[in-house]
Image 1 (cartoon, rainbow, N blue to C red):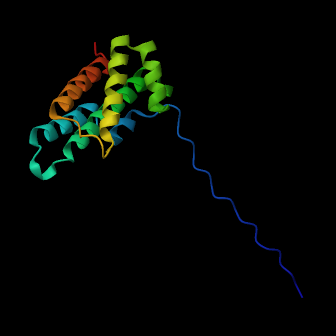
Image 2 (cartoon, helix red, strand yellow; image 1 turned 30 degrees about the vertical axis):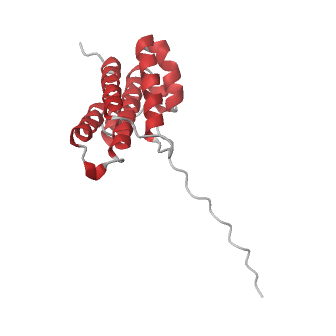
Image 3 (cartoon, one colour; image 1 turned 180 degrees about the vertical axis):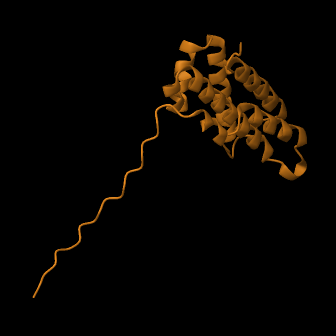
Length: 150
């Protein structure tokens, strides 16, 4: 009688590690900050009764994502390693590289939008005026963080 040893499981193959510096095509997978801002503008301009209660938070989400994407792109140009860090860490480093006003505006706008993105039964959705003010702040930050050509 012959005995066979039990099969030893073969570990799955490891995925290759992503490179530390993404290729220039890495940006093509996500929307640009300007595209996200344009989407927020469309919602701000076409809000109707049928989407009451939904559109303010949708606009806040688009604006916050535009801020985050602008920051990620900024770091990709200035310090590529920071582009892969958590957003909070990127924001903490911003004052050391960009001007302090831009860093403070980014943080304050992001904090307000983050709070507005979440539904709380005891709070009202952000108003049209608040969303327009945040939209203007996001546009200023995007402009300040955009790479300078020339």
